[in-house]
Length: 162
Image (cartoon, rainbow, N blue to C red; front, side, top):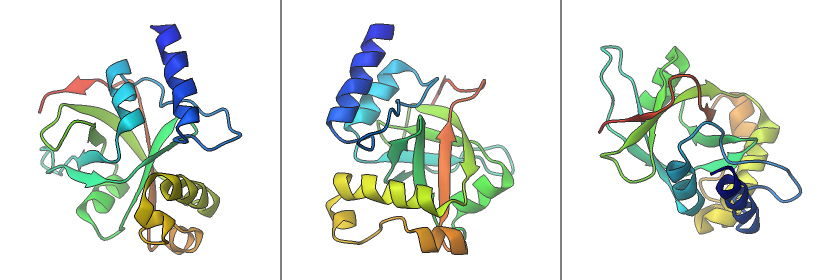
């Protein structure tokens, strides 16, 4: 399986999911079948944990892979943004809003340069971003108008039900 992951990472670099000139890898700690699906996915479904412990409804989001993590942006006023700010994990599905989900650690990153790097990934992946729409921007992240979210695996990562 280790060889399979190396091949997958090489293919990712060829298909420009990873910025050119970097030695970025697919997110570490994810089940291989999810990592493989991430390579082809245009969006992922993201849910957060409510205060009562239940999972929110999953919403589709654009994403990019860089620095061995999954990145996306959201509004600070969204339920997703508020819950992540509160420390909620993120439940991610590549297959649809009904799951299966994998639990990931979410971190808000206030780094305009990372937002610009994600914007370049979006431009290559989404034609609307290439036209200048819905693209992460340094100014919006640094001003707090947009939250830049980094998802990584941790000790609780694993496939969960629905």
